[in-house]
Amino acid sequence: MKRRVAVTGLGIISPCGNHIDDFSFNLMAGMSGVRRITAAYAGLLSVKVAAEVDFNPLDYFMKKQVSGLDRVNQFAFAAASQAWNDSELSLDAKEKERAGVYIGSAMGGGNTIEYLYDQLFKHYADRVKPLTVPMIMNSASASHISMEYGLSGACLTLSTACASSANAIGEAFRQVRDGYVDVMLAGGAEAFLTYGGFRSWEALRVLAVEDPEDPSKSCKPFSKNRSGLVLGEGAAMVVLEEMERASGRGAPIYAELFGYGSTSDAGHMTRPSLEGQARAMAEALKEAGLLPEEIDYINAHGTATPWNDLLETQAIKKVFGDCACNVPISSTKSMHGHTLGAAGAMEFIVSLLAIKNQAVPPTINLDHPDPECDLDYVPNIGRKGVTVSTVMSNAFAFGGTNAVLIAGKRSCVGGRSRRSRRNPETVDANR
Amino acid sequence: MSTTLERLQKLFIARFTFKTEELAATTTLEYLGLDSLNIIEIMFDIENEFNIRIPDRELREMKVKTIQDMVDALDRFISEQDSKQDAGSSSHH
Image (cartoon, rainbow over all chains, first blue to last red; front, side, top):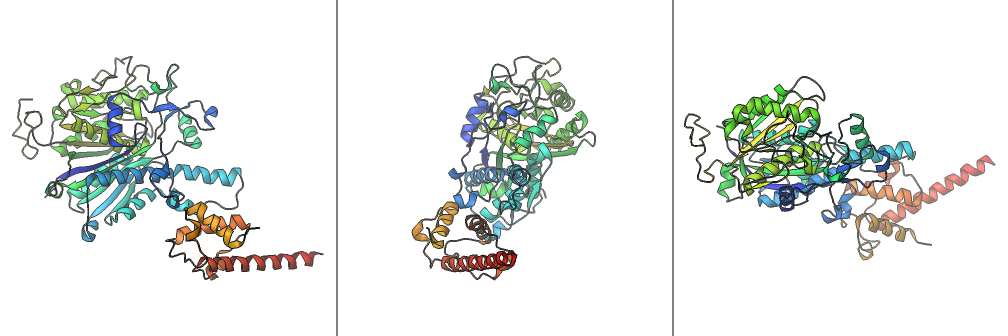
């Protein structure tokens, strides 16, 4: 029998705040984390804006630990500790064997790799930092988290570019649902705001042009004058727990994870496909046992590249049909930037917060509607006091990997009956 | 000029934030809670500070339990290197 899966802990390190409450407040207020970067190499770049995290490692770690942790590990670790503490979980030795860690990261220890090459090729160093290998290993973050909390079930790292952490959460969901484990710490981390990182993205010609009046407004998803993505960094982690276990111990339950869709375009490396995205959404809905009209909020992938936003809009229309116009959709990348491997988990948390707060964050910088992007993107101003019981979070990656997560509260919200997920026939039509 | 012990203490403090009084000559590395990776890191600092390179083989042969053991091993290694260098340079003349 398939088991139900609850989300019982959240943790965030982001350009819009390093605490869930700050993050939630800032997004609802439309506060952008995008800035002009201050790095010494900024003057060399054609695009000088990014969404950086304000982070002092010594606030989180002892000096002894820091030298062995790449920035991406530090983010992952810090977000995981928030999620773990938030869940108030305490596991005995046997229970820890039935708890695992799935982390997504697209680029791994990018800062350490860059430092390594700088030392070797620019400064002709005859040797490099002693812990270079464990710092650049893509799986280091997951291992650190596993060690810290003694979680000794499956510990995997998923790298599917910008869908990495959505895939990590989706696969972790299945681990719990199918009974392999009872608890998963899952999410993603990214810290690739390096000179090489900026140069690589610049070369691909997908970065946003800086807004001439206000650099913080450079990312404009779904707007007619959108010009590309703004790079971000950060980490987002959730604790997933078997539902009976969670409710039995009276845990705070943010939502139930209902469904996960995972598809590949099998098409083009960087140009998204309407079909692949639509199938991922449809699969997630099918697994959730929900109809499109039962989704109350979509957190879009919404990168603000011309192609993504157009095709994602078309994919949503294909899946949602006539009700596509009724569902509020936002791209919070307009505020926290594109956090690559952390994006899926970060935006899944945004979606869960919409349920928690009964409020939908805006897509900021949407001043010039694109006639071809004609859905309700919650332009510029967040909406409070709305009924949000079921949410969808989209992550569509380079390489054609698509991951969609659906979560929600199964019980009545706002006096409105929800349809039973086990008996699709008993649809309550008063919606 | 600083002694080998003092130079070592400075390195330990810089990397791991210990206090000087925790770094007595008789203190064991185990007591300081240093694992194998921490030792690799401090060896890196030691090699920089003393401008030496300790080959893996020789490092394995150094039986180091306390900070004093480390001081002795270093002093021995450095004096051996010096005498090798002296021998090397005299043969060229």
